[in-house]
Length: 607
Ligand code: AGP
Image 1 (cartoon, rainbow, N blue to C red):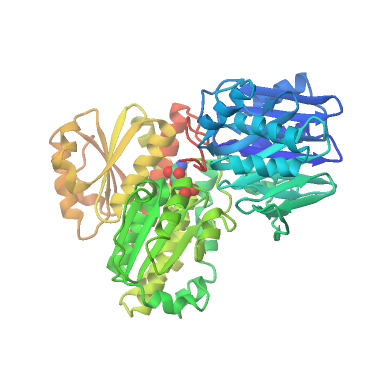
Image 2: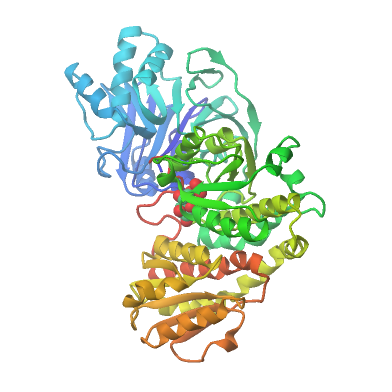
């Protein structure tokens, strides 16, 4: 969603800010803008569309100043137009960029209108600029005015602010939306995520909820929500440019699909021991707590929800622990009956998904034994709010369509299930562990399927709709395959448990409805063969992923993607990869924006 970057430096910042916005493009946006402040006042440029349009405007009319802010906007309040693009300005003297949503913006707008402020945009952000202007006029103290402004706002925000009359200073505040401060060489920065600052610094401070900050090129002062000066931990993290660039690949998504063997290996490193797997995942004090867990509630969104669905099958079939899964935006708004000894588990790549964070806060009212998050961002809000964090080692994921984050989530979840299974002395765990140790190699080999998938993708790209079918753990993998296809190719795709076919979706099946079936050679293959016949009898076209191709009649309506034989526990991890490649290839045939699909954002930081 919206991306924020700000800088105050000993050198000119205009181009540096626009370059930072380019690194934030992956978050998803529809307009972009930049403001600098110098002795001559505020100078601003805003463009609808891509950052490159803003860059071109910068080349034509460069902005001067050693302090400034920039922003990519993902429209919530008001259409993606130039006047709604950030930065927003109050009376030529205050400029603001903001990520989040101000819930009470209408009420504040009414008050400010009554006080004579004129609004140029439909955004909620503009109230921050005017409210600050008003408070600063009354207090003549920017820190106090910032606190008074924050106290007036309900909702979530991470915003940066500059003043015409203080060209060497930058202010920022956050509540419910992440904000990181970068410490440079005679420079300080702010950003909504550290990727924006990748080439500028490796020293970061993560602000806490309610913090505000004022910075010059040499000084930094942080205040907590009671306006008391505080210090926050400094983190050294080097994010190489290689981690955020496409390298030799055409798209970030393709690079990330190919990184899976390596990141799965990193996620397993040091954790897949013959002894106690849990000891490698959790601190000592968590062991007794986990031993007493009788049930698990998983909550997540999108791809992370699909990972949770797979885990629920694993928890029950491998570790014998009852497990429920729910979409975070549903969970957060209903009452729950929570039995004793229940574990609450969130899953999130970004750790910043607003619905998942709200669900965790909601869960904290219901007496769960403990909260755990499976997350790819060590300093994210979810990681900070949870009792325990299980980190995936996916590295930075830039493509909006999640790939390597998903398979590393599955890897961590399987480790957790194995660990809890060990505590309960379940059988069959060692075989799974042996298979898991070989998983990076197995995934590597699967990438060779690319040449067989390409012609199928060419064919699939001619359709408007597709159905994905699977049973057991292959059902959530079918969901994930359908999600990938619709996200990046805009082909309408739905997934069903294969047994549901004749309870409705069969009505859709004809020669215009391709069906992708996940058919591992396990106890359910005969049932799937029956589903295949139902489809074939109605002229439907099939793509079958299977390690038993001989079981499927050769016909021009059936295309096979040959899969290796693998133990059932690892089927979901393996069957994901060809579905990612299939979606990617269809999207490239159709020429869509694979890494930044329309309307979508990487981190969904608003409800
Ligand atoms: C995945 O391809 C999606 N872009 C999306 O569904 C994503 O998984 C979802 O928004 C949850 O994000 P999170 O994992 O960062 O919480």
